[in-house]
Length: 235
Length: 130
Image 1 (cartoon, rainbow over the protein chains, first blue to last red):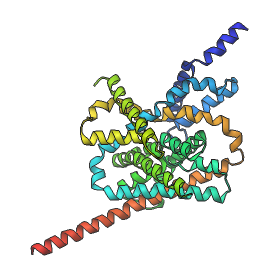
Image 2: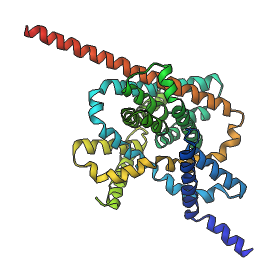
Image 3: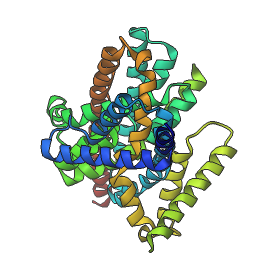
Image 4: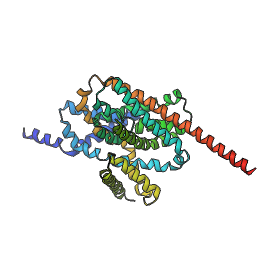
């Protein structure tokens, strides 16, 4: 019994969560490379693998989170790093300043309004609505906005990842459906509706699309924060 | 620059972001303030791209990895979402499409608008010089 007791303590070591996450994510990345389909998303695969392992072996979430929280800590510097793609594309941004700013502003506004309208239509409660409002922006920004709106952060993150996957699968189709020919407009559109996950698809569509999509992640994030703030003041 | 120093610079800016977020009279995510700080410092000049390039690339390339632990926490809310999963998926689906359309169309329309204004200005200028 003593051995079992010790083993249980080991699960509460931060190394357990860190090692498990890296292995699960790398498995996701290699499956993604072989499957070559956006549905085989590395994040989705990693999350499913970890949840399966925790449930099957009856490991408490708190044990996993000892290490998980240390990884989560790096989301803030990763968000700060989003300034680098904006900086690198500063010349294109300056040349198309108003189209890009107006596009990301209008896009993030429409995202909040459409999600809010649909949540009301389906009679979802306030907490769930607050958790879904920021679903188009990148995870760290969505979790910050969701906390402020009083939503549930893990649900917001799941919605963010799902939206990203939908965007990355449907991007080439949406471009045709809505007849968007300009590569800048394509990239900004993909980045605004499906953040970093959609950006991987935008990069595959073209260098300019990829750069614009990466630029839009940060801009859409900033505007979503502003709209969400206005939203809480007005409602 | 050494990778450790690059990490220190980014983390220091994140710390500054948290200080500003704490001082601001309204709620604003500290991570977004840090992003704006990095952009401002790069454009303004004291921070050079090579000061943070390697570390920033590492963070950006592995962005998805950092999402995993908070997403795993969803297991605590599965029963809460039961019966609403289809609706949530539907909302995600519709809003991805509308957001893309609104964004891309606004960009295209504004591009035409600014191109037209430039054209008008150019014509006005050439008319003056004649």
